[in-house]
Length: 484
Image (cartoon, rainbow, N blue to C red):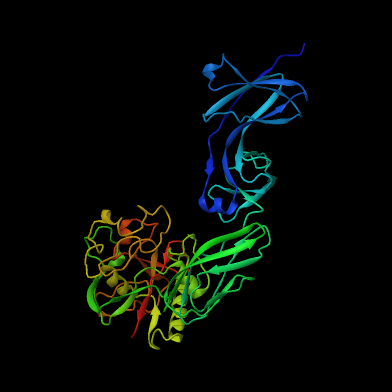
């Protein structure tokens, strides 16, 4: 008589992700709900029937329930238990057969019956702009259940289903800046698995037109204003559309705030909470000429419009401050902006866009105050004024969402560190006029703190130094327009 063997196995599982991110749903057409299901790999005799039994807890081990009587179509054979409820564990057993139990991701795909869907994935925590293709399936029903038996067990992934016959998805930026009187080019780009037959742009301002075959919007805009343009791309399935906000300006510089001449104390007193030694000796500084300073940190949209590229890590909203820029990148932006506005007659031949000096930065940040912050000395009150480690969620945020300082400057504390022109060094002490910092050095001064740092790093007097070539995900800049 054959020996009687009983194998007992348990499997843990959890609901992973209900995948309903708006932008991905729009791009994919089909929708995907995913979760883990117990999968039993059974090795036995083909065409023989095996009762698969289970209990939810071992406390019920004297009361096994029959899940199914499975006639084995092949050996080994993968059986997915789609009846498993949302519990932490389920135990299985079978006689005269061997099996292993593991978690498998099951995808419930809703879409058009008969459509070919490319199943794609990205590892959790991975770049959601870089999806990989797992396989393609034709939907025989709506919804349809699909089990990922291809991926390695234990892989933690998000999935989507791309309908290969969907209308085009507009992928070009949804915000653009242009300068009145200066030639402008913007190309409508779209993702489509079928050939794109035409493009269009409704609501273009005077001076601009669209090439319907290439999607190029070009021309010379003639009037200042904010324009809402409907972009479209067509394939055999139909049109895909998106809205472009086009801001036409006299200058691509961020909005500027006038700062008057005046005198203030640079650095911090010895009893200021959180101070560092490099904030002394305190120095009386006279700013002899008024200047204009950026109301906001330079945004990704502004940087892109001037330089032609966006180096930022935290993308998705070009109203966020530009980051991953070096001191050299920032001064190059200022030089390009200066040349552009001089050529357009927006500024005089002697006016220059540049980074602020450390003294100008602290003078503007303090805005006539002498406390740790422009709103007082208590860092616990920083939240309404700044994105810092206590509230940022470890990322940048669109400019201008927090309260301004008394002179109307936004994000002067937090969001991103702001580069200055000066080499980082020791203050001179005494009384000086329009200091420019040390003549030489190895690092450039940065101010204001960032989303990554705590409240004490956001104080008006706090300072650090970075290499002129260093690029960081919390480093950006604010510009000054000097008319002297």
